[in-house]
Length: 467
Image (cartoon, rainbow, N blue to C red):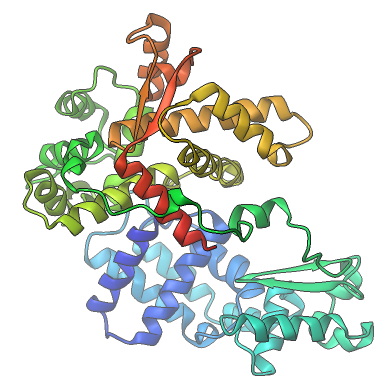
């Protein structure tokens, strides 16, 4: 995710620089491409080769030049790196600015040429460029986009060649396939899309049309229970431990090992296992509770809101909005800022299971049996399980749901009951993985129930998903 961090840095960059709105839009697009295409969501961490990968391997072949990227992209990246360096926001593990600037210098001729080299272009850039030429914006009216895609799909092979170029020979079916455009994604299928049958992916992102269930019609709950959130207390404790002077970081931008026991003690954790701290650290950065400043971690502006909510000084709406945003970060975990390449695919597969479980839980009035409801979830969405090993992935999905429920219970969105308090084996494993014992070794008879805040959260997610 890291969306809030990225947006905040874009805003700070715009305020630091010339205030040029076009440059602001360019860096926002470039950082999003970097996160999506290269799986590098941390906008402050730039290693050797990152500039080349972004501009030559992600932007030039795939990104339509609707923001003046060919002419101004290099300058915008240079200014953004200067901003990170001047404000101490450049990550400690980044290459030295001088080395990054040399990478940009080497691309002064190569990048504009690559942007214009149609032989390098992939499908989406070819299609979007052709759309723009015909006066249809890729971010415009969906009906116009669908109509354009239908007209293109009706073209004879030779009529397509001007747009598709080398792809006609390199990709089977491109001479006669049908184009589908969904947001920033372009796909070519061998036959027209079947509107009457929904694919697994479409099921995830576009639920079937239905009358709004009663559980979607939830009144706004009292904000008083927000202060019971253990996550809020952890964030406040983390910001308090960091303090006004900050704490030193190692050369990887992480808390020094010598300082970690003191932080765990300040948080009241019995274990010093990294899985306990990592999610809290990511959420704290995302919500500006803490900031990484080159060699130190410092208290962020978001810590004030956390303290005000816990002290009852924030407005009811501020308190409720913060609680909901934090709950959303639990249900849709923040992508690790320095994750292994390729891990994002598994995270994306895991991500829908907890929201689907919560939607199923919302249908139940009162408590539901955790094991039975999980079985219902897996049966209802069996098609999501990879055919090569469905039992293994069913276990992964069930574990992901339980871990999310454990975090939501600490946040005040659900209550879980019917489990032994401290089974020794489960407690030890839970301490190692930063979750609840019942989530590691689930027992028969465990029940789960949405709180008023939890029902409100599900209702907001359902409303955002549409009818």
